[in-house]
Image (cartoon, rainbow, N blue to C red):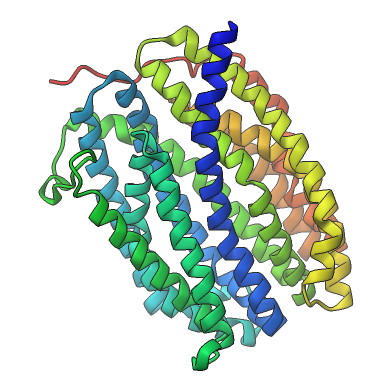
Length: 451
């Protein structure tokens, strides 16, 4: 690439990645704040909430498929300049995102005990988790709608506004956490229930701001009657992207949740250490998440505009950036390990588990970063969404999960051996991912001419 092309590339990448990375950081900060604040109350409260929030994680897997399918096609149509098709995509996202939210809301309100028993058999943890889910379920009802608004803002170059809304909601969530968990300024100390109420209030305000902003003339207006109608051809294109994304992310999301369940059944100390390490993982992954989302938009814009060669060159550079982010993330995890281990109130056994988990996770971060940028960014940006599902079926479900399950329940391996098995999937599939990338199936224009 020429110096001018490099300047444009890096300017565009940072313009997109920094606000999106900040948004991911702020979202991960909620889980961190929950863990730190509830960790100061009791280990049981922190562990139960960590398990209960896995339900929202599964919901986000479905929402990811919906919003990312819209973003893949939306980035290409935006690059092409077809605003009307982009509007139709937005309404498709709202239709399916709303349906997902309703299903998870009903599950949390009427079947919270069944959900919690999947993660633990400890009666105290189940009781705390049920109280949390019955309040937090209301936030899940609103999340599906607000995520559609935020994603369409990213695609249409309102990235900074999107980050401001999401970050503002997160800051309010953390402030509400402090007041409601500890009972500041005369409020009752609600513990885990306070964390759930704080999340619900923040999500309500986030959605309200989105609805108000989208009444502006420069934004894509919501026409609620169009949610249940649309072009059959566009709906089929949407489904071709969404279904492999859903399959892949279900495998990934249920797989990560299964990891939590397996570690949770090893013992409460292991579960507590895993809860803390998961928060650190999510915080450190904000960098690769930001670059990955930016990669999908950048590659999609160029491919949709018919600039296939430039889109290909962008993809190659972004893959290389993924390696740099991965190595930096490894160094960061190792650097913060002593501070994290000392900060949270844990038993001596849980503290020893946490130290070992952090070292293992440092190696895992290389694979996580490279795969996020390459698969969820570049490959998805060109519509090659089915590869992620295949790779997860093999690396996670045929190797990592069976090994972790057998080690925990049959061979009774030490907890760190079991945890290492849960980290095999990302590192082990790197050669396969690079081979797929170099076939360049992802270099394609997905757009249609509007009828």
